[in-house]
Image 1 (cartoon, rainbow, N blue to C red):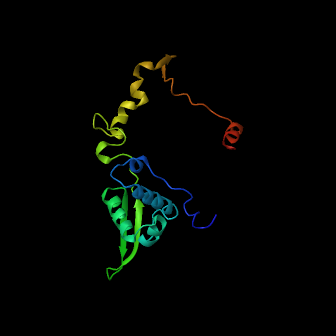
Image 2 (cartoon, helix red, strand yellow; image 1 turned 90 degrees about the horizontal axis):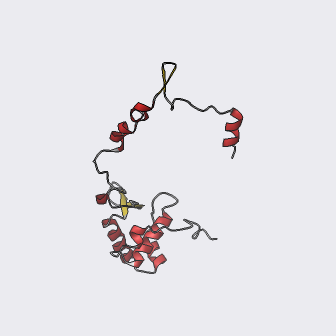
Image 3 (cartoon, rainbow, N blue to C red; image 1 turned 45 degrees about the horizontal axis):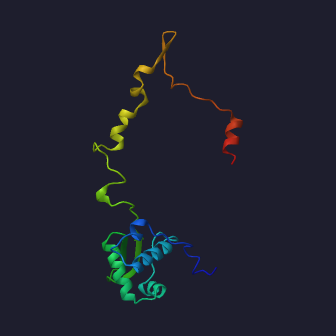
Length: 160
């Protein structure tokens, strides 16, 4: 396997891209190439010329496709410039949000409370008020017993 083919080994096209009717088929392939090239550094820094050679199109076409993917929120383009305002490097990050933010992730809460606000109702002591057992006039919770494992058992458990 040559170095060029070993860069990312595979490409990912999520369903939000794959089934998007507003994207051209080659834009979807460009997205896949960007994901593949992002595996090493966390971002893609390939030039338009390099990407154009891979897809056998004009570099200006690549520029248009990248702008379109960026405007639709599928990628984030970060341009690093020097003190003379010259471009040093362009970084393309995958903006992997599986669900549109306006719809929530993956299903919105009906009561508008976050999970940390709802946890007080999921407390074992509050939910089991009537389940305490009285033995010898002492309150013993059925949930207070903890299992004790031998050291040998724990070693065998974590050996694999």
